[in-house]
Amino acid sequence: MNALKANPLSVNLRDLATHFYALGERMVNLVEDAEGELVDTLSDTFRQRVIEIADHAVNPRGALGEGTEFLMGLEESERQIFRAAHESTKSMKGWRAERK
Image (cartoon, rainbow, N blue to C red; front, side, top):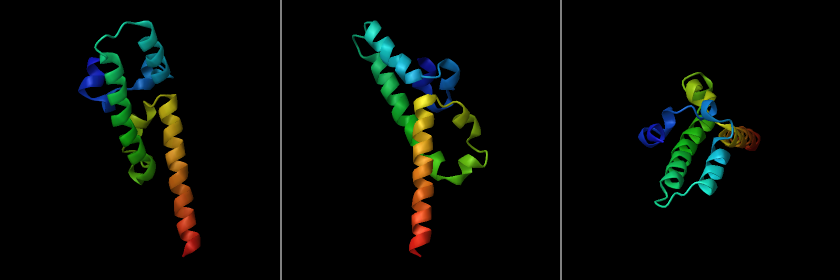
């Protein structure tokens, strides 16, 4: 939790759990989180990481190795988001090329 609060982008979620957010959801339902600290931490982590994931999906520097370590640490739902954003970007570029 402390590492996620400090810098969610530096944590390799895949090493913690392949389905990290699903596990987090189950934990929220199992433990008493009166102050909502767990929910807030998971939500903030997801928000910050999705911005970075989208950047890597549309920016070629991610594919060229600059973001490799971050991308390797994506848990499964983040990988699905990355793939969808990357495919969408490729489709948009193809569509633009056809229109020219």
